[in-house]
Length: 635
Picture (tube, helix red, strand yellow):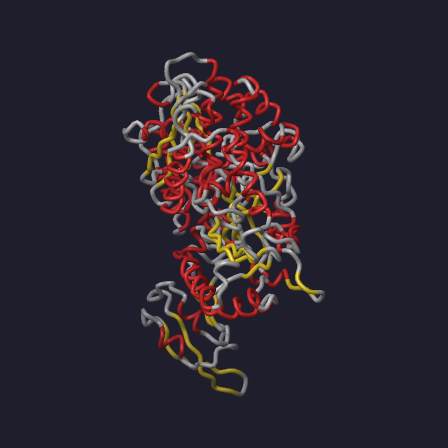
């Protein structure tokens, strides 16, 4: 272990910066002092699950065969964002974007591109290939409208090498804070920047730090919420996998600002790659003396520990998270007192989520005005969203606040697959609401989303098309909430269960019209009386679907019909006898023996067809899937 000095930190940056900047398209035609080519391979969870580790192994073998090991550097990075096209491999300095790469492609790419200098066009991301040649991937629809601040290093550096982070001006915000700024200066910069918490509530970050600094105590704590329990959310995971040092640097800045000497990162154990890279980053920061005693020779002391969560959704709530770090069952505590006064171990504490932390070093280095110049009047900066569901470009995007839902879904997301119509988008996970097509052009920011019955949440954005049943969607999120309720307070423990029971009756065709009014009344009761924010927001999916898709609820209750054909108990499969040729394929594949062959008389003809016995039908849909003549449909 060696506590590096400011001069040594600057020397590492000056050595590494050209090496890192080589991975930008503006560097075309320039050479890295060490390597002729850099090949960045995504090492995030998505691409790893698709086999990127095998790609790296095969790539190393091919480089050795072709004598290129001293000319080509392989960089295992974090997520590039466009998860739908993984595994992803980008060759610099050209910026050639290879998508859905398989081990079988590697020999050809090495021979033609890395040796011959000609990209293999057929393997490139199709949007980068034009009639006039290739374009940079940053000019494609997915990337063009993005502004990567929190994600700036993801896909650009090796997250397991501290020198690469330093090469991007990493730890220089910490250096600036420790040598040039008072704690009050840091707080003022954050207040002026307008940064609000990216974990869901949107509380001003500078104000939270100001409250914690105001309390005198012998010990204070800095906490990072990396629990990320929303279904479909993977923003924080990707930052930790691609740029873990940014969180360590930001937390250390916070420690100096509020007067804390210890921090904790609470990360779910289901994120093994993130956990591993955090462990490596903490070890490396200790080796350089960027954590521990006398950081950068300033006398400041700060350390960070990891705490693994077991996946309880409620531990995303700040007081429950702190209770879990203490070694107790994760349950929320009544507030006040707020954590800034009595938090972890009853000491003054602050807690921010990963994305919030990832913004802070850049705000310190570039200034409050730079950050405040992005976004809207009350929602400054950018926001990271995890795009999922019925969308062509599944992945991770970072956009300025105020970007419309239409821009995100139709332009960045590439629209809805199979020509289907957009129906709704769920933001904020189980705590959020469903945004219908009528609000397609609403600018996305904290206040606008709340006004239309949803919320920003941590950034999950699930897209739904015409084939989704909104009653079923509300039931899905409520099932999640019921399962994840800690049970401490009656409104959440019992109230959400009663709501779910009513929804289940409705999807089975057993609901009554008065149930809709009862559900609404119960939703508002839970919101007003649940102990924590998670319980208070649990009814949001029900309220938003009742508000915008009440006709679907009425169809389920009055007509005993699911318009989207999703709710199994209300389904009926019918045969169009004019299309049916009586081939019997559906009959042979029916697991319940519910289909029989029949004959019917058409004008001048006696034709074969089939019939489905509704009493025997188990609503599996095998018959419809097997019919080559589209003669079977669901109603």
